[in-house]
Image 1 (cartoon, protein in one colour):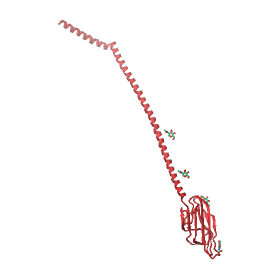
Image 2 (image 1 turned 90 degrees about the horizontal axis):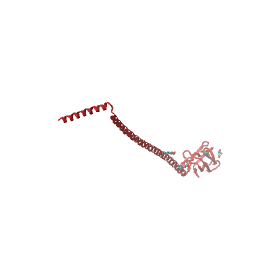
Image 3 (image 1 turned 30 degrees about the vertical axis):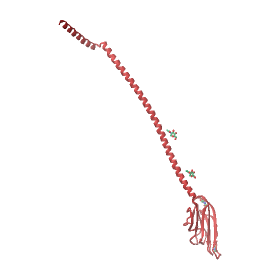
Image 4 (image 1 turned 180 degrees about the vertical axis):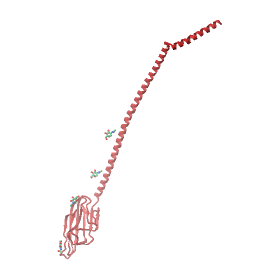
Length: 244
Ligand SMILES: *[C@@H]1O[C@H](CO)[C@@H](O)[C@H](O)[C@H]1NC(C)=O
Ligand SMILES: *[C@@H]1O[C@H](CO)[C@@H](O)[C@H](O)[C@H]1NC(C)=O
Ligand SMILES: *[C@@H]1O[C@H](CO)[C@@H](O)[C@H](O)[C@H]1NC(C)=O
Ligand SMILES: *[C@H]1O[C@@H](CO)[C@H](O)[C@@H](O)[C@@H]1NC(C)=O
């Protein structure tokens, strides 16, 4: 009992000592405690430093990734530019092709036009008396009019394309009359006929021909030689022309 009591008292003293000691350590910044704290802090700093190093690594990786992405982006930009170029080239090629097709079709039209024969023959169908000075002598009845270059309404042939052309005409006048004429290109006299039956008891006829180099748009017609178109008789009178 006494022994137990003694042990108990010893324990109590030890406890009190411990408590006092602990408090004293806290209050007096006991070097052991400071070291522990220091160690803890050091560990913490080490852990932070290693975290920081990890972050640095991640950052470098991210930078690498970004660099890689921007390189690829630049490549893509180049590809887009190349595609734009190709598109541009294709558009231009298309435009050129369209232009060529247009040219070709107009060339084909021109060739077809050239292939068209130009030839006419017209007969006078109405009696003409006392023609005005230099009046156009009309041949109203179409026999042939390939190319439609001769107009039976105006009596004028309009050259549809450059070339060498041959023309001829025949006029008849009745006894005691006359019908002198000229063949003109754009009003310039090229050839004449003298068809005079002043002292004749029969009709008289005269013919003439002309070969001329014409430009597209030149006009040719037969006209009275001054006022010498007293009587130009139809049916036997005619005018013809063709491209050589
Ligand atoms: C686009 O075409 C031009 C010439 O047409 C050339 O100089 C340029 O290099 C091309 N660009 C690309 C991205 O292919
Ligand atoms: C069309 O004709 C012109 C003149 O004859 C020529 O210069 C041009 O090359 C031709 N175009 C084509 C597409 O054949
Ligand atoms: C035919 O027309 C051309 C103009 O295209 C002109 O220079 C020429 O003088 C004309 N021919 C005649 C015979 O008048
Ligand atoms: C008949 O000829 C023409 C010329 O071809 C003359 O102009 C006319 O005057 C002439 N007429 C007569 C009645 O002689």
